Image (cartoon, rainbow, N blue to C red):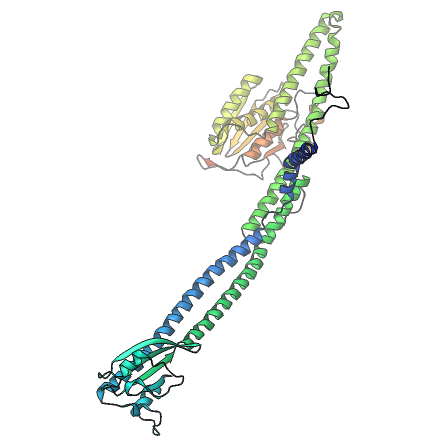
Length: 519
């Protein structure tokens, strides 16, 4: 039984989930839904960092680093030179003043500004520089104030009372809003002293203005560099952006016939051409695949229909006469064998003739001899091989052997009962198989190597119509081409060429444009 407190499902039973629990449940379900779908959608919709922006930022950052470094070094060098120059000039003034007072006894009156001729020792100090002069009398009292008034404290008064001429005391003093370098030189004998001062704040103001201008110039250079980097990145990445749009369109819609922007001769143009060529090859491969599937479906219907018909007759196998039984079993075996051959050849074509056999140096004469020996055993026909300067090419021996064997079996099929031997001619890097069969109609010469194509005279013969298509695939994979022609005197000439190799004797004589027996 379920009581009121037993957790049953009755109307009065508690649910065990209050408002907070339901809220947590809803939030948890929404979070799981976001993690499963919303997060992926958010990642898809979030725009990636622009290559143009990254390029512009990198360009501006590099320019900023160089500009700041050059500006700092330039300002530091200029400030150092200005400060050293100002200090050396002031030191020279102090040295000249000490020389004056040491050479002859001078008093405060000699340095007053009331010299009408301006040829006194004071003028020798102020003439070459902007030096401020103030005169201290005996005891350190100010005899003539400078402009501005220089400090005359205890240290300066002690120098003024000094008996040694040339005794000097130096210090930096704040006068108003300016900073001065003050030097006090004793006249000797307690007669007083001469104070000279140089304002350093003007130099610092000059350096401060230089610093501000350097900072403004650096900012302008960085801004121009960023704008230039953006413009340059736009020029460089514009084609990449268009190429990316094309790639995204192909990935989204699956269409391979979109135009690819190709311009210029740089790496981006090469990428565009390579991408365009890749799309073209991919489109061609897709078309070939679709055509192969359609043709294969069409060709498979015939043996499958025949098999179904014969299988339906097996239900009345006991009612058939012995001859009909044997004919039915032979027909079933032939249809199964034809279906098996057709499937094998379809697999070979779908694989694109990508054999596991590695590339190696292949002697075409040896390939011809082995293929002829194999065809003799399988067909019982006489096959002769003639060579003229056979080539040695880089290729796959097994694939070339199969291509030549297909041509020999094709010749034996159409020249069944013939009295003349089938001929194999190897000239340089060129194979030719010659027979005396009924030949090939003029209208069929350009189509005999198409997949599943069978001429009117060949439709009653066994075969899938893929043997010669495989020959063309192998020839193309080896840099050559397949050809067909009518043989003078009756019969056909079918063959293929291989990419030029290292020949023996006089070397390979590959003539891609020549068709034996043709016009």
